[in-house]
Image (cartoon, rainbow, N blue to C red; front, side):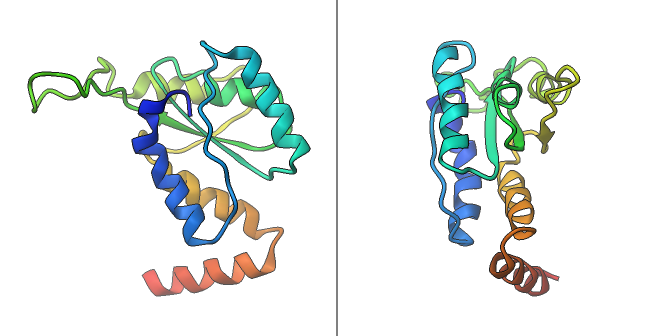
Length: 154
């Protein structure tokens, strides 16, 4: 995720991965504030054998695309609506003038050559489910769990 404030959204992806007992790590890596760390993280992910990366970011939301440009690992982008949690008005929490569309477009409109899969605004749980589906193609036990879960919800 791009910043600690994104964790309230991105934890939903972690919960899905935990539910399927998929090992994962949660890291804060900023495309703007720590670009060198971003490149190191992409290399780390490949060295550690990661199969998929879920990257969430708000505003300009360069994190998913920047990671995708430095690795061959599939990246799922989660556009995050920026909130002003410090607002004195309890009802006025939204901060982004574009309702998160800015983040969505930043993630989906990457230049050709660095594609990023994307889910809806604040839909980190969908990113988690999508990651499980990608992994299920390689791991038969995960595919079985996923099929069982899908039957239970239909």
